[in-house]
Length: 210
Length: 262
Image (cartoon, rainbow over all chains, first blue to last red; front, side, top):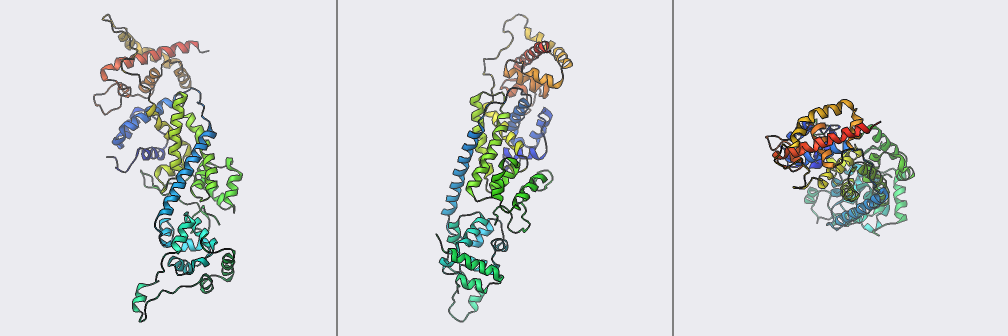
């Protein structure tokens, strides 16, 4: 019984996994026995392969430059549509974007050169105002997560989040979520001094959403 | 800063593939030479410059990897251009024997499929296959298109032997066929036999010969689910004689051509 989620393209990939196909009738029957739902496609594929293997005529003319130009144009259109759809989504927390991209927060923090504490503060939108956050940082996060810069700024603009709900419940005072400026967050972080200085320099080179 | 590799690996290793083999459950992996090339580019300090500087020198699988793992759209475009120029050669090679209009139509279909596979998100078994056996995957996608351009003779257009009530010459041909084939095979080597196939004038005669003689498809079968030569041409089992006539004609033409060979 063919798995319902398999497509004929999957079957072709499975053929590739198993090495070169000899399009003899016996081999065809074996593949049909494995994937009976694709019997017609397999039959035509095996026949076409058998004919091509014996084909001695000249290779037809196909302009590679034209073929490639059209492909690039189609790819760019698809990528643009994908970016637009992603930008149109409701803003989500940074941690969600990280998870969706298949990474951990620690890995992303390490990749862009900040400590985990700052990353969590960014995720909880507790670095305010966002106009003080270096553009270099946001660009690096977007590049690492393969998403748009606009989506990262949107994530940083969400309402502040407390670090612990239980901490808020224990508090005798009116609950409030504290925030820090970028400079304050960098100063209290555990990053080595040269890294702190690098991020201060980045802030001097440009901050806030474009 | 590189945007091509796994971010949690300081050694800048390529992002692993996600699919698993059906037979043994082993993870898909690229060939070692491709992995080595990717690592070499990742560690060059400036992968984009390295790629653009020597685009023609890298393996296609390597270019596919970087086309997928960069957010630099300009670089994506350059990589896809190079990849698809290479794909065009494979497509053309696997469309031999078709007329120019059909070749263009098939190439268009394959191009659209390849573009979608190149930028597939999330990756699929087929898209990851491009990083393992690019040439094989393009060949498969091209051959897959042939069924849409299957050239089978229309009903009533068969060139059969005779419809008269006199002794049917086709019967004589069928009887002689095994001897004729034996004689042909005895006199030829396999590459020679392949060249002789060009001497068969009608494409459906050649196809019938290939399926029946070279690929051992049965002419008919009591089980309708078994692929047969007659079914391939959209014929009923009782029309097997027509197909046998095509095969005999094919053998005759090949034997004639053999006589012309030096």
